[in-house]
Amino acid sequence: MTEDKNYPSLLQQGKNLAGFSFELIKNAIQTGALEVSDEIKNQRLEICRTCEKYDEQQVRCIECGCFLEAKTSFSLNSCPLGKWAESDKDWMEQKFDSVIKGMENNE
Image (cartoon, rainbow, N blue to C red; front, side):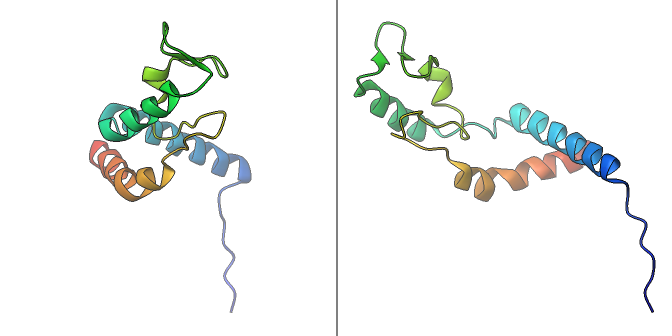
């Protein structure tokens, strides 16, 4: 015997996903969960400092134009030349659960 299942419309599902994504990002920013450790940030900056596209005066990347103090801080950023990559594994393994718990506690 098959029961009819009345899932929300695709439009409503999209709205639900957008709402969840907004809350996820808001909480991640509030908790600092989108940032890498100081150790990772410093490793990234060292890589940038040895690059031919590094602007020492402005601590900025000539390739992408980003200010590197900020760019190297965020876990989901990466070098446009492939010299260092995003840290999504760290984000998923260490920070995602704490952000979700924070969202649940705010409800």
